[in-house]
Amino acid sequence: MISALRLAALAAFSTVLPTLIAPAIADVRDYEFQLVHDQLSQNEATEVGVRLVKKSTGAPVADAVIFASRMDMAPDGMPTMQASLAAVPSAQAGVYRFSTRLEMEGAWQLSLAAKVQGEEGTVVGKLILKVLP
Ligand SMILES: [Cu+2]
Image 1 (cartoon, protein in one colour):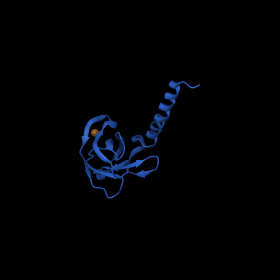
Image 2: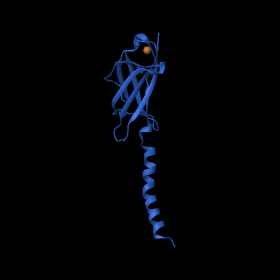
Image 3: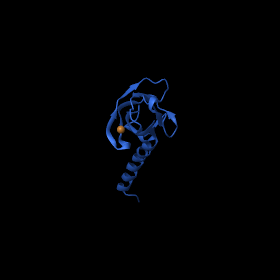
Image 4: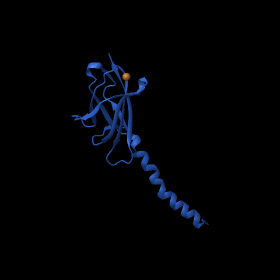
């Protein structure tokens, strides 16, 4: 005979299980920022493009809201050396563009935080790009 307690535990498990599985399918960790170009020559280092993709499908994500962004030289040991960064219009769905001014050659880090429609949590990205002479 199955005790009432075991039945209750079974019932609880069967209702909890789907919610445990669901986040693995739709989760902010399934989204990724990628640099359109990870190397720029110094004279073209005035604009950077990032692609936001849903990793499981490879689909571009067009309706994200990027609410925080920062460009600095942390990868080269200069975390306080910041560059200006401003969102500019993009003609390509799922590509987000920023005007910037990377005056020093070396490694720069673009940090991003975004909200994706229909997803809880924040998509974060730390991307390293190189400015060449
Ligand atoms: Cu620097």
